[in-house]
Structures are given as structure tokens and as C-alpha cells.
Image 1 (cartoon, rainbow, N blue to C red):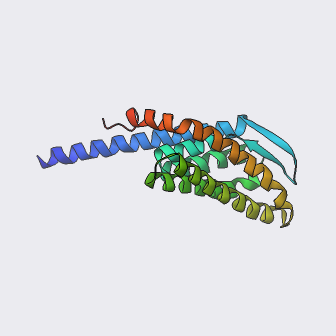
Image 2: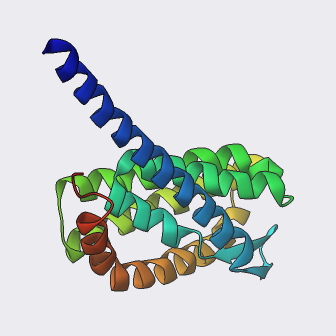
Image 3: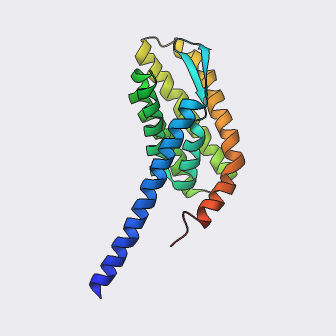
Length: 184
């Protein structure tokens, strides 16, 4: 009887791990694709800047599937973009900053549900992004005034993502709870 119970527990844990790995890998790919292919390069600031929709799958992942998946999907997905697209110097900063964004959004929305909490979580991620990239740009360029010009682009990027995410997240969360997250 004990062996059967242990086997059942291992099977349940393995299924949980498979779901976690599958969901996280899917959102790494979505974050990368939305960053790499749904973007606009800005002709401003020292580095030109980039506005992309990679934050949309990042925030959806963190809100629906939690802080661990959100942190990994965001950090790896956008860090991979930096490595593969000529923004290589930014990759270590992106990995940390965006992982913190995903973790923060997931941590807040794991404990509190609802549109207001989702919006607050995204606002916290916005602060992390603005402060994080300000510091990163200051280190990369050795200039602490120039990073100020990147702040409007970061705000637009998070603002657009917030509108999209807040419009669809409740419906997607409901679908995920009925299908992916439903106990088998």
C-alpha cells in the first residue's frame, strides 16, 4: 500500500512538473517572439530604444501561472532576445530586471485576485523596469543623465502592455483554471 501511495504522489508531482516546464517554455517562446517581432525601434536616445509587446506574454504568464513561471519566462525570453539581436551588452541586465518584473507581478497576483491587483502588479513592474534600465543604461554608457531619455519609451511600452493584458487576463485566467490548471 505504501509503494502505491508513493507512486501516485510521484506521478502527481511529475505531472505538475511537466505542466510547469511546458507552460514556462511556451511563455519563454512567446515573450521572445513578441519582443523580437512585434516591436518598433525608436530613433531617440543614445541606443535608439525599442518598444515591443514582449511584456504582454510576460505579464499574462506571471498573473495566471505565478511568480516562478513569470520570472523565468520574462528573464529568459527577453534575455534571449538581447543575445540574439545585437543588444548583447543588455542581456545580463535584461535577465535580472525582467525576471524581477515577472516575479513581482506573480508574487502580488498569487496572493490577490482582481483587476485592481493586476493593475497594481503591473505598476510595480513598471517601476522595476524604469529604475532597472535607468541603472543599466547608466552603467553601460557611463552617463547618468542620458538614461532619462529612455523613461518615456519604457512607460509607453508598459502602458500598452498593461492595457492589452488587463483587457484579456480575466478571460484567459478563467480558461486556464478550467483546462490547464484543473486537477486531472
